[in-house]
Length: 260
Image 1 (cartoon, rainbow, N blue to C red):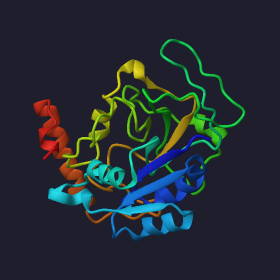
Image 2 (cartoon, helix red, strand yellow):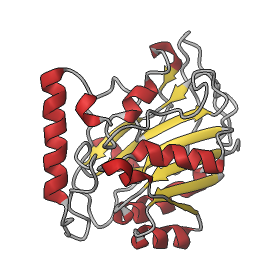
Image 3 (cartoon, rainbow, N blue to C red):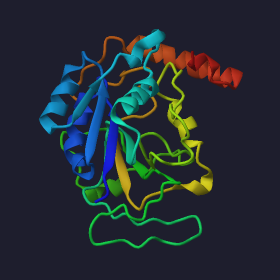
Image 4 (tube, rainbow, N blue to C red):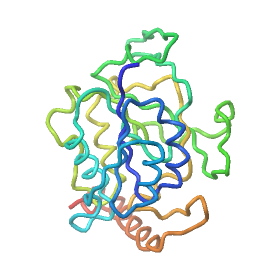
C-alpha cells in the first residue's frame, strides 16, 4: 500500500480518539496526533496505540481560543510535507476495508484492485469522503453495515477538514504554510484550504466515514459533553466567544473578527 500519513488534532478529545484510533490506524503508515503538553489523556491514548504525539503551545498563542491551523503547520514543519497526507479529526471512523476506486471529472473510473491501493490517486486532486453523522454516541459503535442508517451531513459543498487527503507535492500548495495561521478558532482554516483546488479537482472517494458526535460547536475548544458525561469548565466562555464571532461574520459578511 502506498504510504499515507495521518495528522490528527486532538485536544480534550481523548474520549473520541480512544474509540477511533484503534479502528483507523491500520490505514496509515504514520500517525501524528497533535495536542498540548497538559493533555495527558490524549498522551495515554497515543502511547497505547503506539503512534506519534506532537506537543505544542501553538493552539493558544496570541490569545487564540484554539488555533488548530498554526499547530498543524508547526507539525508539518517538524515532520515533513512530503508524500500522501491525510488531515483528519479525532472523532471520525473510517471503514475497515477501503477500495480506492475513483470517479474522475472526465467521467472515467480508476479500476479497483484486490488489495487496498492508492495507485490511482493523483497529486493534483483533493480527496474527501462523504460523512455520515452519528450525533448520539453509544457505548459500542455500530458495525459498518449499519452506518448507512445515519444521515449524511447536510453540507456537501466543501471538502471539509474532517478528512482531507492530498499529496505534499501538489502544485496548488506552493510554499508553506499551507493554511492561514491567524485564526482564533478551528472553524475556518479548512474552508480556505480546500478552496486551493477547483471544483473539478476535488473528488469523493468511494467510501464514507462515520463522524461521531456534534460538529461545529467545538471550534473554540471542547464545549460538548464527554462520552462519560463530563462538561468542560470553560465551555460557557468558549460557546459565547464562538457565538459572538459567528454573529459578527453574519453581520459584517467578513471573517475579520475571527482572525488576528
